[in-house]
Amino acid sequence: MTALLPPVEAFRAILARPAPFLTLAPMQEITDGAFWSLVHSYGGADIYWTEYFRVHADSTPEKKIVEAITRNTTGRPVVAQMIGNDIAALVRTARVLQTLPVAAVDLNLGCPAPIVYRKCAGGGLLREPARIDAILGALREAIAIPFTVKTRVGFASLEEFDTLLPIFARHSLDALTVHARTVAQLYRLPVHYERIRQAVECMPCPVIANGHVYSAAQAEEVLRVTAARGLMIGRAAIRSPWLFAQIRQHLAGAPVAYPTGRDVWTYIRALWDSQAAFDKPEKVRCERMKKFLNYLGEGVPGQFLHRIRRAQTAAEFHGICAEFLDHDTPMPLEPLVPEPLAVTPS
Ligand SMILES: Cc1cc2nc3c(=O)[nH]c(=O)nc-3n(C[C@H](O)[C@H](O)[C@H](O)COP(=O)(O)O)c2cc1C
Image 1: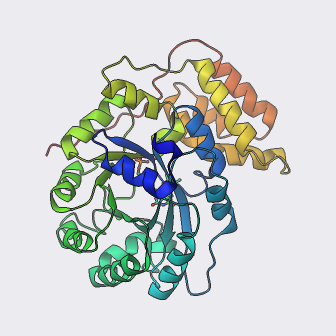
Image 2 (image 1 turned 180 degrees about the vertical axis):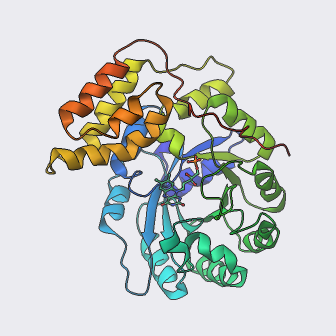
């Protein structure tokens, strides 16, 4: 029963077990403690990641993220993610983070936001392998608990991964998450799952596959193609918190249970109750909800998302949900926009 173990042992037990494990991706302004709890109530991930702590010479760990860690109600291990490039500051922050009830400290090497990568942090660091080498060396020495990295497969080209992987491999990481797109690619398809397979073959630690996992069947296919030990799921978990349970059902050979329209409506109300800041004007609360509904709406047929994006009041917002979701038809909640084949041939 890993849930009852302290976070570090629970994390190690999950990584060591033969069955694939499922993690919720870190997502800025989405994956706070309230969202972890909500996802957990639908079956949930085996491991949760925090939003990233911004680390620089004068930073202290953001209170809001620290509170999410100390108040974690999921009973599942939480990994604390950092973003930055200042070695002394990263080491100082990692030392503080490992005194919290976290399972591991993670370094972000993937953020594609220009404001981040131009400062040579997140995905920007992938252009400087020697600097990554120095950062990983210092962090591995400073972190007594598990230390993990979440990376993209290069900054501008896939070939960069051939240089990056040996660097990751020599720092005794406890896990490597690979979001199999380059930074320049942002969120465009295809996802280069064959590069995750390359990481599995090269790394001495478990590799977690990330990028565009959106259904139970496709999750199984990504596990098969990559041979990764686990999956990390981001946007599809916002769209469907049922996805973790569905993947477990599918991998166990059971039929996949889909939520009905009313189940989806209940989920949106739960999001509203846990996320819409009650002390803020209605318009601000609606804007907060749109951060989630922009993803969820991709799985709802018709004009739902178009209408939700224009909602300004709680009455409008809930009225649109009632109009589109007051039914018992099962909803796969997969992205409805036509997309090229997600799994690139290996
Ligand atoms: C809104 C949003 C915020 C994100 N914030 C972070 C973050 O704080 N740290 C990080 O490593 N990745 C972040 N990501 C990237 C995701 O963790 C993940 O790698 C990416 O969405 C691909 O996975 P997916 O296709 O399952 O969504 C973010 C993604 C989104 C959509």
